[in-house]
Amino acid sequence: MAVIAKSSIVLQNKAAPLRRIFSAVALGLTVLLSSSLVFAQSESGAEQLRQFVRNSKTAEGEFVQQQLRAPKANEPQDKGLKVVRQTQGRFVFQRPGRFIWDTQKPYEQKLIADGKQLIMWDKDLNQATFRPAGQALASTPAAILFGETSLDQHFDLLEGEDRLGMKWVALVPKKIPNAKNGNDLPYTKISVGMANGLPKALELIDGLGSVVLVTLDKIQLNVNLPANRFTFVPPAGAEVLRLN
Image (tube, rainbow, N blue to C red):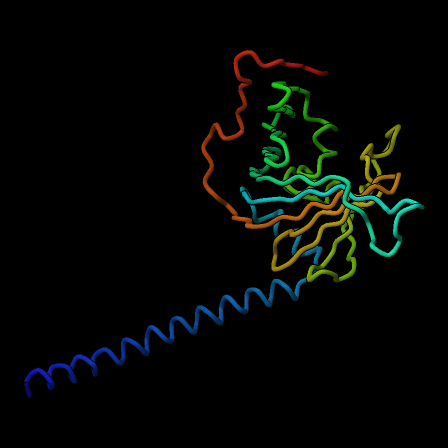
């Protein structure tokens, strides 16, 4: 019994330095991660957004998209904007210009950009609509965040307010010389909410005061994607529309 007790003491004595080493490593990692988050939050929203666009080659996650409007004259005025429609689903993107905006509830729809064209697939209608990417792609909420490798080429980034735990950045489209209709975007205001280096919300307001609010969650950066991830082939029997 004495031999066993002595061996146990020796093992405990040998384990103690290892525990101290592991504890020091764990503490170091915790401090490093905490410092990274604090550093990210201390940066301006515009710089966080620039770094996200610059460093995220691929990503996937979940979204909730709400269409909001101001209350009408015969509705309570103290409850803020009213949700007219809400959808949710998953997104995946690969820069430049490839993404899937996969609406799963309350209906199934997919918006797919494969780098050359924009495809809308509606499962209920059994219909696929193909059109060249161009301006149709540029005006989608997904393309604003996921389409370009440099937002500064198309937008001026202006610091906004801090609200809902996010640093908001206003994206003001740059004027295009000799353009007949300006930038042709349907929105009068575009804002992105940043937190810990990630876009958490996208707010779009059109000329009629209608608001689209997109919130993003469970974002995973720089994931491996198969080569055919953005390839879409309509099912047999589906109606296919090709627009110029």
